[in-house]
Length: 177
Image (cartoon, rainbow, N blue to C red; front, side):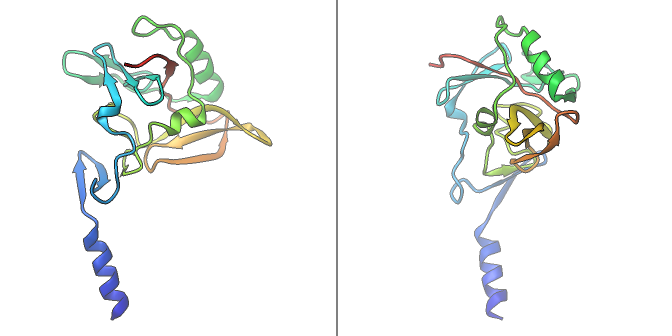
């Protein structure tokens, strides 16, 4: 009986807000890790993180930012790790050509730990899939694998072969005001 009451109390202590399919714990219980105010949202499809001085593409690779309605059009593309690195090197977007595949720490900086499905701030990063996203970081001791994040649950993984496919969000170094 005591366990049942404790379970009911814990369950009642959490309130969730839902936006589309995203599920977020109440901000009064779990603080935002990527609050909107931390970012400078630009009209060119980029967002600048004032805390890390990283500029991100708001849409996943393969999608096109639609400035008229502030959304991502087209379908995100899955790439192998090598394809992701090559794509980043060749990418020209919003007047910049120095985009790169984020390392595991850079990618971790945009995970919203308060939310799942997807584990990202949806006001800042648009149309993020609840899927795996590559980092440029090779797993130490297992050079055939690279670190990635699942934005379904915000967890990092090192069990994926570089020959597998995952999604990509590109980043560049910038000075954010």
